[in-house]
Amino acid sequence: MCFSELRTRAGQTQTEPMIKEFAPSLYVADGPAVSFYGFPYPTRMAVVRLSDGTAWVWSPVALTDTIVDFMSNFDAVRHIVSPNKIHHIFLTEWREQWPEARIYAPPGLAQRKPELQFDAELGDQPDPAWAADIDQVIFHGSFAMEEVVFFHHASRTVIVCDLIQRHPEAAMSGWKGMLMRLDSLVGDKGSTPREWRASFLRRSQARDAREKVLSWKPQRLIIAHGQCAQAGATEIVDNALGWI
Image 1: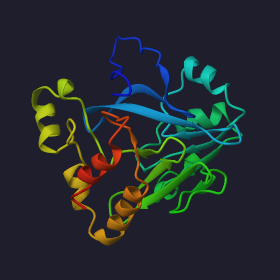
Image 2: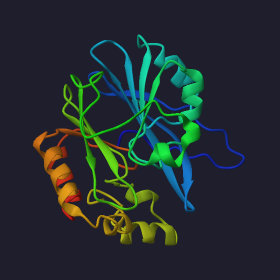
Image 3: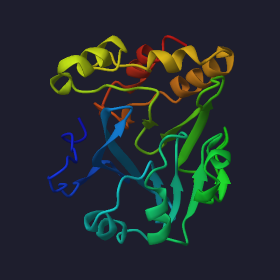
């Protein structure tokens, strides 16, 4: 796992997140847990040092002094991306901290949240600003939510947000844990929430996206919720997205 799970509960002080090198030029940090329909979801972000020395930030977590200090190691915070339309809750504070950064929306989010004032919308091809370092593809075909998946070339790391969830077995207790297990979101065999799978009415485009991810032959895997992997990422993705 990238980090131990961090939670914020009433009456507790949030632990400062640790920021660790996941691979060369690629870093991860866990933020506080947020409530999603009553289920506590840990948050995780990734940061890539691009070839020009600037930072590319994926799914930013809540800002802390530790994170602000860490980001000073880059020439600039240049690009901040939201990979799907529910990973946006901390974007405003990042924009306020780094107003010169460009904020990128996934399909549908700019229309849903115009107050966030996005600079651009993500597409199936990487922005020229990071194309030399990072590839990307959108999983189209869902009427509920489409997600942008990224690939860091240098470390052979695929970066997935909610399409693959592998919540730790030990944290899945009680009736909520039982529901998470029934939804195939727990442990090494974690996958995509069943209700989201059902929303992909046109799966041919999603199959094409899955094939592109597999063609990258990723070695490592970063996900937002649960267990990351330092090896075997191609097999993990193949199995987790086999439903497509």
